[in-house]
Length: 293
Image 1 (cartoon, rainbow, N blue to C red):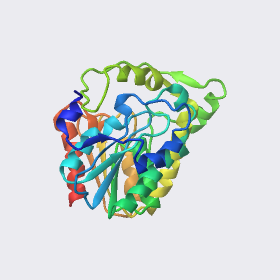
Image 2 (cartoon, one colour):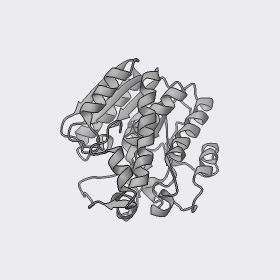
Image 3 (cartoon, rainbow, N blue to C red):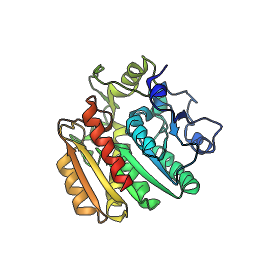
Image 4 (spheres, rainbow, N blue to C red):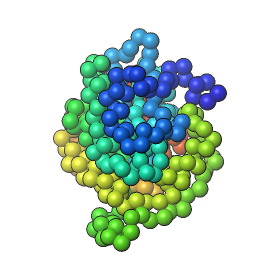
């Protein structure tokens, strides 16, 4: 039995017969491929619905299973929780390269639009690229509370001009990847899931897709000074993907609503899913407390 099924009674796959899935399905329009287990969209909903739902948004080339730990904590605190999958994520390289930033953003827009009709309020949590998308929908849907985990407002090593020039000569850059067996995932998953994701997503950098990510980054930065959300941002001290100093600067100079920033010592990019339990609990418990206050 998958670990998540042992640990959280509220967990259920988002089924194709449900209204929310019907809204999202048109965006999964390429090969109709089934995602690997860890990329299954899911929900945790109480028998008696809470007044507040939380929408969780995973990162670029990530998957819904990466958001299980905060989802579990939020569910146990009484919230109903939903985590969709972006088009092209978790299904393979061919489908991924047929999507774009607008497809990924549309998934979140459709989800929060649906949840706004079903609940009195909707809070949003976004990791990395999910933090960009969360910021955009926070502005568009006037979200009350927002949690950003390692949001990709500043990408380490990224230069738009260089990437644009480089893609004139090649489509992608190979990057080494190997499995870190110290990470322990409790989401639904097959033992081959990480190998599949590594081969199809994490072993190369597609330059067109990085530019799609940057479009979302620019839109999110332009949204920051227009959000009314009570916002918390959680960063990892040793994050090699995003630049914490620049993110601090962007948030403090642009966000006019209440803002808190927490940097967790010794943690990398996956704060909410980090391999040291005490560190990931600090990340996820902080979000729960922020949403309950």
